[in-house]
Image (cartoon, rainbow, N blue to C red; front, side, top):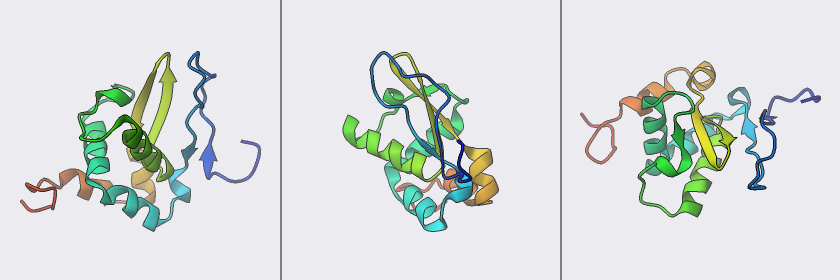
Length: 128
């Protein structure tokens, strides 16, 4: 980007044949704590983050997550994670691939993802 802000980074991919807009990513360094906490407060988004943490970069496509929400709702969850600096996405043909931005997010909020990822109580409430 030519401007001095790091808030949003344009993806490095060209438009796809599907004519959908490429995702816009927020730099974790520019994310307020409240935004990060709100993104991680939702159990579906925490599930997405945990599954991405267990996978390699760019291994998981959007449709590969088994969560109890509609496709439109899942898209919104991905957008919230991008806006919080947690998720990077890129298009590969008809697929949208995902990467958890753990190193970048950990630099901004040390220990926060570690807490979320080790949360393993029966209702996702953090109890062991």
